[in-house]
Image (tube, rainbow, N blue to C red):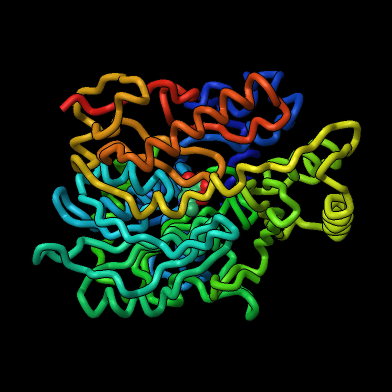
Length: 447
Ligand SMILES: Cc1ncc(COP(=O)(O)O)c(C=O)c1O
């Protein structure tokens, strides 16, 4: 593919095709000033020299075959819509409307959008939860694979999680295959697995049928590029995957048994600090930037681009944080207070309190209205509400708003108000997805 791009870039062609910058001739200066002209010279769409993603020949197809060989797949598709697009295609290729999909309640929101697209009905599995770290652990292969006599269309597992926690995929795939059910793995954070003896085995090596990886996360590709792999042993219909992709594409934790050693999570709650407070010091004062901030911890990703000097800066920064007396004090002229609400932010119990009022597709298409947060009790949620910390969706469209979720939302709404009006520097909580980020009101299904 790279050779084909190089050759095409040198062609003295009179171009009358998209994209309109015409191999850089009309590239906007605001962009060339930053990234130069070269990326534009090699940016063209569906050119015979490059081939098409779904055609059996040409450089793209050859590159996909090489990737399949490298990752140990029967077939690999390159994705430019991220792992999100691959997860949607994998779920749509295995589940028809009305089929059950078994998936963890703390799945990435792309799995939820796939429920809406496919019409599959979720059967949520509840991950084990570590309350000290406020981090979900892996899944155990003990889930029932049938509901009311109906076999599940697929089992969906996220492994590793954002924090690098892995599930026992070889055991889960064995259970699934004994029942003739395909296993789909969201391996967005594990594209490097299987390439070094000290890294966990990859999902494909452990028997998963369909695996989606964000090549742009730990590996070094450009943002949004991902891969979907079909296992050599799978019975999933490759035509069905291709059809949906075509439709989808634009033309040392104690109870976390297996972890990615390249994902380092440091906990700060024993200092009385939230991950957000430590992030303020690390990011704003020392320019040490993590991948993920949680209520009680911060997570750092080590990649091929990580260098020794940066690791030394991280070590010094952590030494600095542990040496500050946080009860009264100052760090760089700022006042830090112990976050007494760290314990309130643990969301584990909420994951077990799920009642569905509609299936996700019907909820998505139903008419909606806005009610005040207090009025929403017992109603069916009509929007996805995700609170950071800790980044696990609290409510999906289709779920009934229970007492415990409502209490949690009211508490978070209070924290947001307090953060905005009193302690702007501690504004840790952010709401993603909700139409009213202050959470004074909520969209519900009007049924
Ligand atoms: C666990 C998980 N799955 C899927 C995704 C979606 O990946 P992408 O950004 O490649 O669409 C993410 C993104 O952060 C993720 O954390």
